Image 1 (tube, one colour):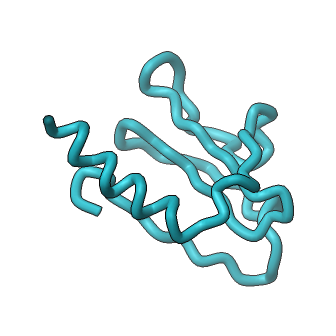
Image 2 (cartoon, one colour; image 1 turned 180 degrees about the horizontal axis):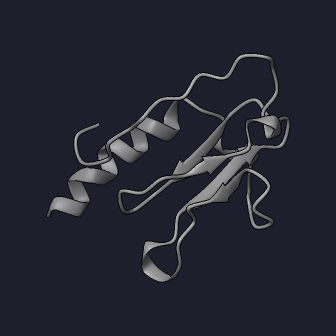
Image 3 (cartoon, rainbow, N blue to C red; image 1 turned 30 degrees about the horizontal axis):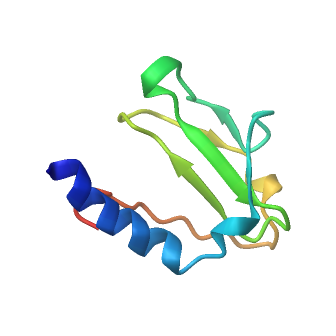
Length: 85
């Protein structure tokens, strides 16, 4: 199915990262606006040391991210489409 094919891309995304150090952003310290609700709710997690974060937005929307939650003076952002990798 389509969803099964997308899991291959999801695996690729997480394989190259220490995903086990991710902490869910329950307190909205990282993703401060654009979260949404219900099945379209965006989810965020960041490494405990602030070295990286992952945000999932199931629908197209504006998001506000508090970059102060990430370590370092420079932050690089990348978009990842789970349907195509």
